Amino acid sequence: MTICFHTLGCKVNQYETEVMAERMQRAGYTLAKADGECDVIVINSCTVTGESDTKVRKLLRRCRREHPGAVIAVTGCYPQAVDGAADALPEADIVMGTRNRAFLPSYVADFLEHRQRIVAIRAHEEGENFEAMQVGGFEERTRAFVKIQDGCNRYCSYCIIPTARGPIRSKPLSSITEELAALAKAGYREAVLVGINLSAYGEESSLTLPDAIEAAVSVEGIERIRLGSLEPDKFDDAFIARLAACQKLCGQFHLSLQSGCGETLRRMNRHYTPEDYEKVVIRLRAAFPNCAVTTDVMVGFPGETEEEFEESLAFVNRIGFAKVHTFAYSPRPGTVAAGLPGQVPKEEKERRSRRMIAETAAHRAAFLTSQAGRKEPVLFEQEAASGVWEGYTPNYTPVRVCSGTALNGRILPVRLTGSYGDWCVGRLAEPQEEEET
Image (cartoon, rainbow, N blue to C red; front, side, top):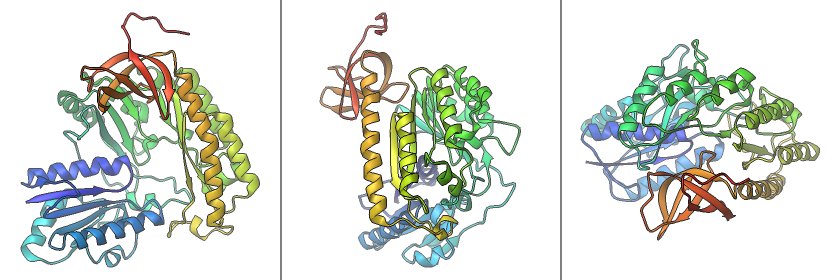
């Protein structure tokens, strides 16, 4: 029988889809493309916003309409977080949460035998263990994602994820090195450590994120380690010093901001001030020369006045991020923020989004321009066009190079000669070429 997967949401969801796909293959299923004919369809859902929930329901209805005879399972954050989710997903034959992915093969087998709808949503509880999972490979043959952390206890006022994901729990160090060793053996050169609240790795024990990074960089064959999204309040001097000592760690840090206004951050229940955040950026840039600091910024949070928006925009401009993901606040039912006064009209949120995007685009262009003249090792991943190969530097600058020889999967020195659009262009350099200043 054939099975296909639709994944909505973050890199952690993508990793977990790979885990479920491998388990189903071991159970005898053949993977099919999501837009083709298949016997079983699995939708791995996201619930980060109310719009995310809508996307799940629309996708489910489309899958049922296009594949009336298929077995359809919905799993992930939406069923786990939303009361009555099973009733809101009548087209699904199997509804699961975030705690029982390992049972997907048995649930599908049970449904095929008895044709009785299955709703299996197990509540999270304090003290639960990190779910044992390991991925052997990805479609992308140069970079792998490794989930090392799950759960969150921050309770930001706009976020439902603590409900969807439960308490903090972390993958054992031995499991991290074991998984990375297997990925290295399979030919992967780079790995990205991801989690729901990655910065909280080890909080339930005596470990910290630097412990996980140090274990990861010790694995032979993996030449680069990247980090997923991070919270800024963990980055004290000792923390950064340990990271800087890991030579395989790439100088790319996605440091969640959300707002550059202190009063807005307080209403969001974030755990830092703009001044705290700026100090972290200064420390990172000192410890990792030419690093890229990227971020997320929310506009139109409840109560955000025009003055607060201007304060946030000024802060973002002062930092000068390598890239900013801007999004308008979307009320998430079940969160504190959904009931706060001062909800900003949609048109105003869109106006603020456009302005934030326009001004931060200039910083992105300046960052790419600043890379010209540098010689950087580039891990090539794909042929972007005939004879044009695309890859990434350690700070995740996208680079395109012309070559008549296949470059994918190789790390080669490249002289960056300029920028075009959202990437840099360059030429293959000789290893002995000196750095231009």
